[in-house]
Length: 515
Image (spheres, rainbow, N blue to C red):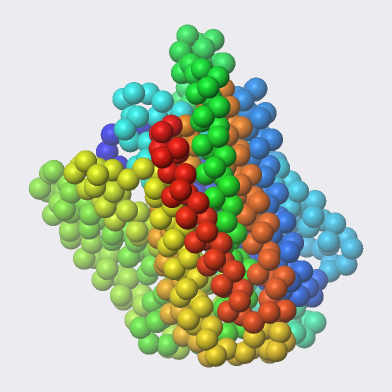
């Protein structure tokens, strides 16, 4: 799984892991922060959340255009710096009035711009590593591993946000209470949430250290196609017709993934509201292990040592990994048994399940598709994307079943109906993660492979622009939250995912032609 990969992959993946840890720590509490500080409804907070995500993911278009001119490495460094300034601004304590709102918007603007310069161009650099024929066959596996590292950072983020918030509340004599709307409590709550933005500053420093310390491992991947030609490294030459075919194929994929991200990014809005309003946050019994991030992390690590114990060609390594797997599982169980029973969860905790499942399921995904390839039955990236859309529809089918018989948000108002087992949301996140593993890393790999050399940055920006549109459209369920029955919200998402999948299957021959 980790064999025969260039060293630059690990350096770039780790640099991205640090940045993503800070970003998802902030994102885990962003809508809750706005509600606590400004008193906004789910609709308003969800709209601002969606606009922010849209700008974050649309800005790589401009970041890619700039990088195609000045180089990917320069843009990555500029992006790190700009993001740091933004998070630092967000971390500064302000009041809940106009000043606080202006500072928040300015900070979000810097984070968005910096992400546009950093995120897409870092992924172009990963793809450039695999332009070398020596590594070309490992491209899809590389992006799966790269995606896994992103989610390692994301997995710990909600727990970090929860820990910081709880410590801040405790220091002011409070404990987390979703129903408490007293001004003193809310001031303490959004003060704790504000500290979570500071985590991103620290994580960016770590990412920068990794990037510069290991730069020699991927220095050749920072160049544009023009710079590569100047260095006497011939870039792939395409005819105008081939260029047009590739760009057209990419645009078709971009159109489809808009609807995936619209559905998927309910994690920070509608699914978080669902956790807050309908889910029993008093967790007891065996269910508690899902809310101990360290137990989950050890279980995820045990998956990798378990795979190594079977796959390694060296007997001593197999034995060592097998023993390590048993120890890791044992420690995870011991930590779980030492948890309070019952334990109190928070709505943001549910956002750790998606990255946990990404990390834990990636080896199984690689094994499954690797076995198919070994039998001569490889599944193309476009096919995986289409199947991912169908699985996403299935994921919202799970939450639809959970919603049967619930009071609609428009009738519930500010009250809660905390009766559902967390299993419903966990099952939803599991299914959506399977869809994500089919779609997202393969989509990025497809873009890096198919994009014409002269437009790599722009086309990777196009992938994120499609993500941006989907992120903005993700606000629709939030805007409808208090206006239509709950199940209608989920039905809209299911229908869009199914329609997008059918369109993808209809275009399959055209897409696979350029692979």
